[in-house]
Length: 408
Image 1: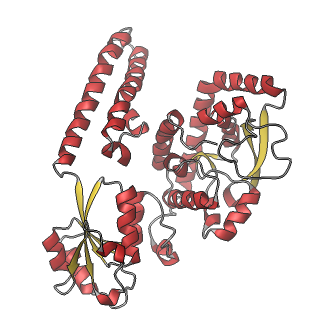
Image 2: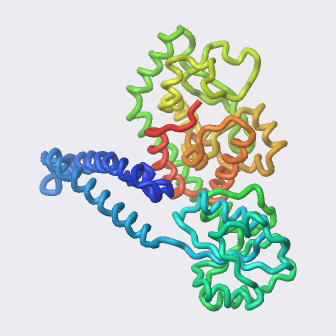
């Protein structure tokens, strides 16, 4: 759990040995502490007072096991293991987007890509043709022959023009044992977000997702309450100390209440520890800037450590927010973004969250481009929401708290 929570199964940890090996001892330490605490609470002979000895043995053993496993993985990668062989149908702009996004964000560290193109599918994107890493195969022999020749693990259909495409050839690929996937669905699963650039409403309408039922809502609410109470109990001394620091700093109010938008477009008042000057918004609502001069000295520390967000746990208990969901925006920004970004209001199909899929995958953003990128993650979450997904996001939030990036 702690290996996952600290990001050691993410793409960057699988490609950067220093990051992966550097975090393994920390994961081992947390794992040893939890295991020792659990054993100390269990009655003999299952547990007892021997937890310090267990911790002393567990941490070096866990660390050695983590180092060994990752050393083996990196050695196998250098020998060409864990590579996925993709046969892409089409060589236009959509195929270029696919190749570029997979190599930048795909969950597999390395992709071997071959491209089959027919002039009926549109023009060849010159960026694909000039990259020697892309193998462009002739379409004359058919898709099945190309898949067999390349020994493809997956066939991805990504032409700019689908009319006239040889559907029987694609069916032959599938019946011969080559999985066939459509561009948008395949890319969504590989990069963990919805590609807004090539999004088609027809695909979104017929694709799997948006299937949460009454039981899912009950379980999610139970998870919200349970996790929020547990976090409040564990962090109450920190919250009280931070509140005292804010009060002593300039004598102003400790809490800052601000209107935000949650499920169904409903406006509520979010609670945060105040991190800006009392008169920070006398000129109106504005995006937070890099090294914002309105932030107080104590506020910078509270923001970087995310302690200023803790009062939002009361919003979660009150039902205005969920523990996991799209981050709530201010009504002024929501109205503006809804006119510029397609499907922006669809992020309000679920409650706003204290943490979310966008927050564990994308740094803090305060611009239209940042909002577009975060929306791609928020739509993925709304489409695939579930209690198990929430638990995975909560675990990954641990990494974001320990290594904050882009906080303003």
